[in-house]
Each structure stands twice: as structure tokens, then as C-alpha cells.
Length: 308
Image (cartoon, rainbow, N blue to C red; front, side, top):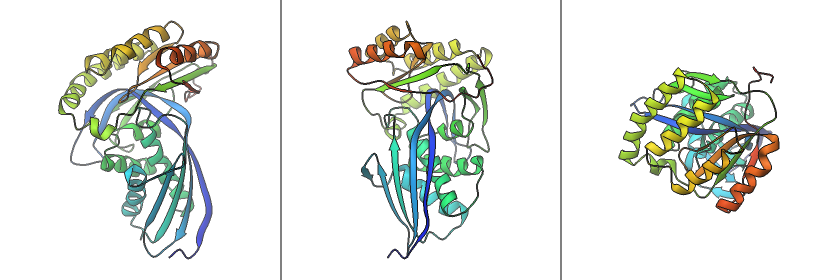
């Protein structure tokens, strides 16, 4: 039975982490497990409102875009938070998530949800955590839920084009970045359907290919860390592991006429395009005409190291 509200509400907004290249690195220790890879952040992708009530035992109600979700990474993140911090989970947790970009499409929404929920719990329960400490908890939750491998680490160090050079949780990994110009950039995402990461990672051939070819792609990107190299290697990787369909390939060809670069999101029947503001209308028109879906326009997360 709910007795009283601890604090009115915590609100957290987290970017999505779009993955384009990944090399699974799986070990017994979840802190060491993760993925090398590369991707880009979609600003303000996931908004989380969380309320905590005192209760006789743990109860989690998780709503995503108005739909109640049972289990999954959200509930796992709550349980992992209490377990790792050694807090008796005598609380009822109400979570309301507004996710702006497609779910289960390679856009890092599960990692964003996990990290946002941990940060919101930290605020609500007055348990101070750094981003890295919160990220470790969220990372373990993602590994346990099977919803991802290394996206939380990318979010913990988000900005520009992120390269996870060494895998693992935020406190273990090594993250580097390719700076983006702090000009009028836009990020456009679109998806034709969901691909559950947990199911995809059960495909041994896919994982084996990603381990081998992801290593090649990340190593090559580290040798030539440019925006152009990122998009070329992302396309090579998607094609080499057998995920690049003709439909996606044809769409990317058209988008690259107007975008700085476009690539397939991992793992999803999805694409993303980085472009200047003035080219966004043409890019969204192409997506609508060729795929029959609406392109969602947002901002990449940019560090601001380059002003122009």
C-alpha cells in the first residue's frame, strides 16, 4: 500500500545514441562487457518523469508514449539501481517516458531510458551520483535486459561523432570523438520497423560477423578519424555484415546527394542523415517519397569545440 510521496517529481532529458558500427565484446563481468563502435547523439530524444512513493515492496509502473510496458530495460534499471546501491527497495516507482524517435530501431532509446531512469531515481531519492556512476548502473541494466551492449557508455561521453575505442561500462571504457562543426547541423532519423536488439544478438552468425568486421571498421576509423570516413565505414560495415538491404542502399544513395552523410542505424531497419539546416526539407521529402514514413528532425549533440 502506498503511504506517501517522497518528492514530487524528477524530470530528466537524455539524448539518443545512434549506433552505426559495433564490435560486440562479451565477457562474464557485465562491467567489462560492451562494444567497440561509433555513432552520434540525437539531442533531447527521451524525456523521463519519475515519481517515487514509499511502499511495502518494490512496484514499477513504466509508461512509454502512453503505453504501459511490463518488464524490459526500464524495470531492470530500477531493480539494478537498488541492488547495486544496497538500498532496500520499499518504493513504488511511476515512470512516464516520452520518446521522440523510433524505438527498437538502432537509435539508442533503451540506453537513454536506462540512464535517464537511474539519474531520475538519484534525484528523487537524494542519492547523489556522477554521470559515470549512474552510467555504470544503467550499463549493467542494459546487459541484463539484453537491450544493448555499449550505448550507455557512448551517452556518458556524448558529443560529436563518438568512437568507443575500448569496450565496457563508462568507468571502464575508452571513448574518443571526431569533432563536428558547431554550425546549423540537423540530424534526421527514419525507421520502417522494429528489430529487437535482444533477438538480433541471439543470431550467432550476425554477432560473429560483427565481432570480426566491427573491429576492422573501428580500427580503420581510428586511423582516419574524419566525418567522411565515419559514414563510408558505417555503410561498408552494414553491407559487409549483411544488414544493408537494397531499399536502404538506394535510399542512402539519394540522401547522400544532399546530406553531409547518411548511414543505417545498428540494429534496425532504419537510417539517419547528418545535414545542414537548408538541406533538411529535401532529405525529409526523399524519405517520405521512397519509404512512405516521416523523417524526424532534431539536432546532433555537438561539443562546440569547432565553432564553424
